[in-house]
Image (cartoon, rainbow, N blue to C red):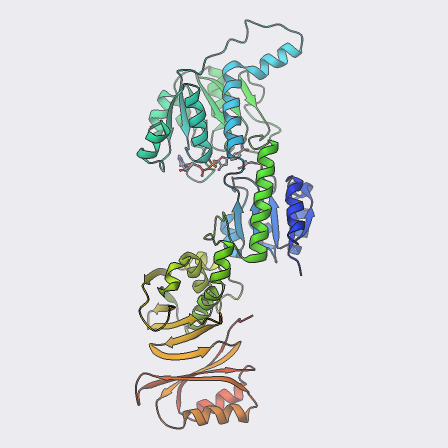
Length: 531
Ligand SMILES: NC(=O)C1=CN([C@@H]2O[C@H](COP(=O)(O)OP(=O)(O)OC[C@H]3O[C@@H](n4cnc5c(N)ncnc54)[C@H](O)[C@@H]3O)[C@@H](O)[C@H]2O)C=CC1
Ligand SMILES: O=C(O)C(=O)COP(=O)(O)O
């Protein structure tokens, strides 16, 4: 059945066309972004949700999104998506980090000009037939200091444009390197230095716990008198009440805001103040940007739903379509190895080490790690997937480490997973043969060669005669057909293991019979999702 995608915000029709062309069933219902109840009711029907900023993907919405696999944000900011809840639910969250950056930077520059020259007020006054030439005295940008808070993609473009306008640019961004700042021709400063020196300030940080209220009442008090503030990033970065007070007192000369603490903003302390320019979250609103983000989000979501390729995800490592194809059998193997150890381990896991050898060590290990962890967690939580497993592992304090090494043995490449608990270490290794089939090649350090089936039986015993016969006869007695039988031993007379690939689940009576022989130290039925 074709995957189903719901578009619940005003995306360009291009997105709908792309989904259709890719064979995805798409419903275009942009009004749902504002209708929480209806969205909640319909969301269980969809594999994908394409949004802009109006739709709020809350924990509640995600809880009822029974089939959801991906949320695609046609834009940059994902503060309207509860990413923790999405990750725990195994839902990938992707955005389009570059599609609207130029457009948004241009809006910030436009807003800076608008507030410097009071263009909106002057325009309204002129439309009204007044000719208030002396009322609207402005300031030049040339030679002024622009303080950029957040010099990432959008902030970086703003810096570039501002330098072309002959402004002196300083940037506060803890993640901006000195070398990069130098290349950009901007002065890297601490926040207080920016607050004290900037004639104009523009914000380009995401809304996070750290950036929330970054222009607080306290920080607004530190601003240079006569400063003008532009916010085309997110509401909530600036204390709107404190700013309104500073505007009224004349400490701040003007403000240009595209985004507000509450949106849609029908009221704000900034409304109706002189020298305040406001726009209704138009930063990304150009035909070019909207085409870009719609096209990108639809392609990315389709790729994921149809091929497993992951691009621009915020909660999962990227996997290209090419990688997804080559890595497919290895991701399966990673899951099976994890699943084998998960089924064998009853006590809490403290650490997981994953060794990648040979060809597989060259692959996208972050994605493979997710596969192993998901396999291990599956026993405790059958709904876990590659997105949610690492989050759950982290919550449980499980240490994950990886080792990669050049080809060291007979196989071109293999994966070995070792799990550490308070009681023991347990390991299993596997490889993928040229037929694309994953196989187990080592358990507990004992070499084997086992094809992996939906139903398997694992036994451990002392290496004595009669084991094969007992296993075969018992399975036969209970009408269980054996597809494949693999044995291995640590050394003659030492510990031995058997892995049987069988056509049906092993009946309890067969397990009881095997245990009753006293020949086996362990008899464990296993299941694998080989589909
Ligand atoms: N008004 C609108 O329509 C639009 C608004 N936006 C907003 O703009 C924001 C920025 O977008 P991009 O530049 O593309 O993101 P980006 O990720 O490229 O850049 C953000 C920068 O902020 C910096 N940063 C993070 N935490 C910081 C902190 N505590 N203090 C100072 N700097 C910090 C980062 O190091 C990074 O360089 C988005 O998160 C979104 O909220 C984006 C597009 C349109
Ligand atoms: O891309 C972003 O972060 C934006 O804020 C754009 O928002 P929008 O898609 O226009 O509602």
